[in-house]
Length: 369
Ligand SMILES: [Zn+2]
Image: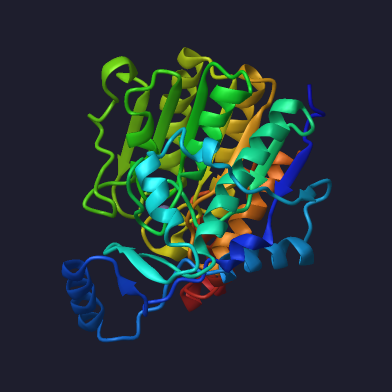
């Protein structure tokens, strides 16, 4: 069993070679026309929001303000065998043929640059390396800082900045090669993890819990009634939330849905699809840094109760560089042993300060005598 509070962060700079821009050719002519119309209609030069600066911002913060005890290791490149556990051979072949090229794969902003296929293989392989580490007991938890993200990638399709489904590849590896019987995936990214849901829809050995902003927010899936199918009916759990939902809603859902689900499922490994776009800086939802810390505390507690602490975080979205990097740091803080914070109600402390500040201001003059 790993030492309590031991954490390894996995990072591999090959993931920086994924540098898509808006100038690649679209793979289908009909789509190309549609995409050009969308970009022209924006009226401003469109910039690809999922860029290498996301990871360098996280690394810079962790260098400037390290979390005591957290160790760093480099990642690995996923093999064809690892990827084809969750993606079809046909899909993999079609992506492999695009090595060294620049292209748009999907109108929902999924594009590649010459280094993208290798970067995506390294992203998936680094998630696998993180899982191998906690399964071997070298660390209690691990965080794979990777990009492109993965949770929108389906078995046959790239979507929403994602090429390979990193967390799904890692979960399938734990099942096929590392002796895990049941893997739980917690997806707290602001967007629904449609790809992870599709891949494990009928698989009773993977419990997928996803809390996200409800449709029609991208990608438009993840309804409450979507609970899996076939043998996997009951092992998909969706919690769709309205715009602006924050700490209180997230933590209540964790305590009252995720905790009993884990109790029922008895996982032997927990993975987290950790996006930091629920933070209010990204404008879709309203989670705070204390909220991310508190959610980490709940998941860590579940991992300690059911899986000897084995817990792996895999980075998904988060596009505001400040909240992305501070959010990752809030998670690492708790993983490494800090007491999980208790989020307050935003603004209450400031109002209390303001009350004290203005206390004397509006007392009528006669009362002063
Ligand atoms: Zn997202």
